[in-house]
Image 1 (tube, helix red, strand yellow):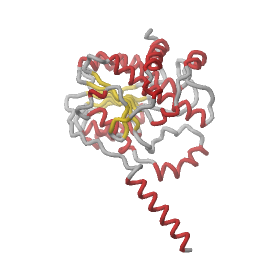
Image 2 (image 1 turned 135 degrees about the vertical axis):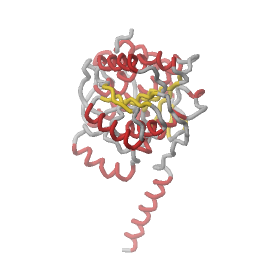
Image 3 (image 1 turned 180 degrees about the vertical axis):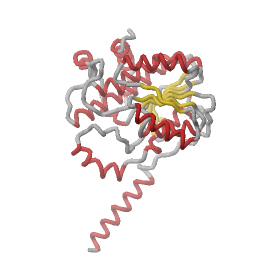
Length: 318
């Protein structure tokens, strides 16, 4: 009995140690106020995106929730307005799985809004299927939709500089790769629809996010726009809500014990959007509110350039 108690005590102690070290995520310490500034946050009706939008609204920004689901987005608008006391929070329809919708959003935004100071490419998913344009859904939403959105809004960002583009990637990019042959033949980053295959596709899309930011920074040199990619941490969100029920049951205790809440998950996004003095680090990758070293494949100039060119062709910009 004593041995069992000793083991249990050791496990509890180890878990508490993890909570204050590995699982502890630092907070963004910026005190920046954003009155008169306009921010777009994609996927802001839930999870990290909603937490990010709420913080920015509390700082006085005009916050655009760019989301697909109108009812959930309007509910988020109501919540954020109530919690922040800021009425300059509104919803605009954006379906990243439709290039037509991305173009429509950009056109409507540019007509209605005179400023854009921060663009946060936050939305992401893990789901099987195809987009409206025939791309793999993970590839289309996590990379191509945000790629097109950013390009269409770049001139407004330049006009309102200094401004920033923040793209939420993931440490999952470590396991990603870019298979241009598969992109050319199947309009996707890989094949398969098992849970493992979908997680692999997600990893590939997160590598796309990092490489996109790497190349974007080069193209923005000499402008007053900077860009950053990031890993938000291991966060409890509903990104996996479309994965089969047995996988979600398996993951539930792991999420409960080892994943942080969405407020923690928003901190590095906020850091990249607000922290003063990080402009020389444009194009870099951040985690835990600090710049991180990248693997060779995540800063490969040739692959980043080719991905940009292929993406331009796929979204109809070339």
